[in-house]
View 1 (tube, rainbow, N blue to C red):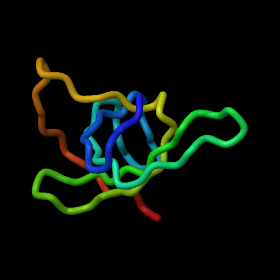
View 2 (view 1 turned 180 degrees about the vertical axis):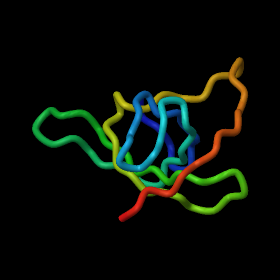
View 3 (view 1 turned 90 degrees about the horizontal axis):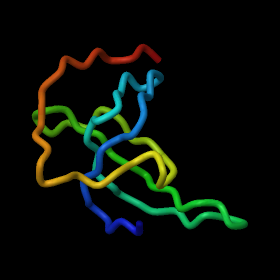
Length: 83
C-alpha cells in the first residue's frame, strides 16, 4: 500500500526503545523508496493525547497498517524513555 503524507496509521509491533506499543497511532510525515527491491519505508511522528510530539521513527511499510472504521482510540499512560 502506498500511503499519502499525513495519513494516520497504527503500529503493528511494539517499539520498546521508544515505549511505543502495537496499535499506537502515528502520522506519516515522509516516505522513503525501497532500495534494491526492498519495501518502502515511512517516517512517522507520534503524538501524545494533547498533540505534543513524543517520537519520530522510521518503519517499513509492513510494520504499519491503515486505521479502520471499526476501531476506536484508547488512552494509556506513556512513560518517557530515558536517553
